[in-house]
Amino acid sequence: MKKRGKMIKYVLETKTIEFKDKEWKQIQNNFLMESIKEGKKISPDQLIEEAFKSDTNKIVESMGKELKEKYLNCLAFSPIVVVEDITKDKAKAVVTIVIYPKAEFDKIDINIKPDGKYEMVTKGAIDEIYKKFVDDYPLLKEVEDQSKENDYVRYNISVSKDKKEILSRKDLDKKIVKDENPNSINSQLMNRKVNESFSVNTPENENIKITVTKVFRPIKTKLTNDNIKEIKIEGINTLDDLYNQLSMNLKNEMASSYLLDYMKKAIETVGNKYGFDLPPILLDTQVNDFIKSKLAMLPPDKANLLRNAIENKQKDGYEIFDLAKTNVRNSLLDAIIEFTFSLLIKNKITEKEAEEFYKSIKEKTLISTGSNELTKAQSDVILAKQKAALNLLYLNDKESYEAVSKDLELTI
Image 1 (spheres, rainbow, N blue to C red):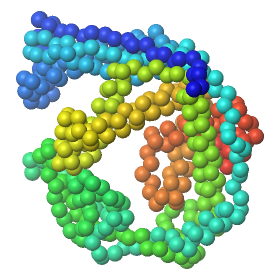
Image 2 (image 1 turned 90 degrees about the vertical axis):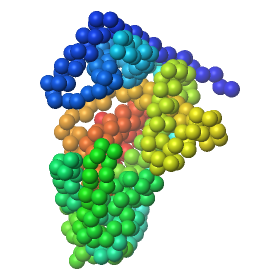
Image 3 (image 1 turned 90 degrees about the horizontal axis):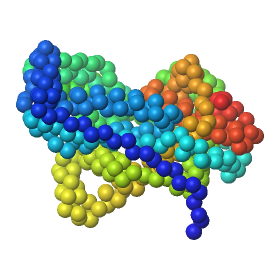
Image 4 (image 1 turned 120 degrees about the horizontal axis):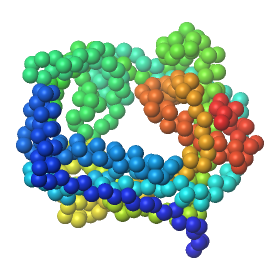
């Protein structure tokens, strides 16, 4: 067995928060007065929980600021708050923050070569992709049939509570995809006719009324200069425009794929070379959060069956628990190693560059997937990761960096 390098260790910073007697009574009274001023109704149980949460958050925020000054350029995970006791007479919680100090990351060597040189996209590859795209493009056509999977539905929505409208939106578009949750918007819009209206009630006693106004279905169509504008993509007015855009997209995709593989190798190399100490409290907390998020995505009956299986330590319960542990451990290691790269490699990203990247990636996503739902925050994460990978590649293989940078249209 190959011997690992130095161990990357964490530090646990803990703080006990405890209120009792007059201090705790005063905190509850202050919170109650604020709630009354804001016109909020609050039960005795809610008062205790919300008052404690409010003051605890202030202490945790102050604790976080102090630790940032104590551990400069550290990796700090979200605070873990464990409530040990809470009644109308007293309240107690322990706050734990997991920290990896910068000195730990300085132990890591980031001289990692890629597996091979980057091969730039050929004209032949572009021509092949272009021909397939033009010959069988899924052009959206308006239909009168019931909506089905992969259709696009245009609808109006109105939300009311206590017979008073609180939200209204018109001409919203949604692609119908398979969803096991019967209460999701996807499930609700499936098998609906044009001009059909239906209502859904939420646990918050809100009534959601939805009216389907149009249904569009992707029909495979050969694109020509006469119908090219029907794809409704900004800047695409001729087949030449389409060819140029596809060429750029393919180069971007190949360069991005190469960078992704390189970054995976770099993460794997560092993960294998060094030992990473992971605190049990962080693992347990994130495993529980992972399981809760999975259960929330399931229909109520399936979620309850799985919840019982976990509690009774049955086979299905063990399986999701093992899945959660594996996913959490891997995601934590990836996060720590990616932070290492971001710390040791200085990314320079201006707001202008971020905006231009967002506009560009939305256009590319629209052409390749037919969707432009990518958010600015998601775009910023992609840009930061690509920049980090480019920086790492520049340090270890300048020739491949130049080729990737050209196809990706991105520099460090």
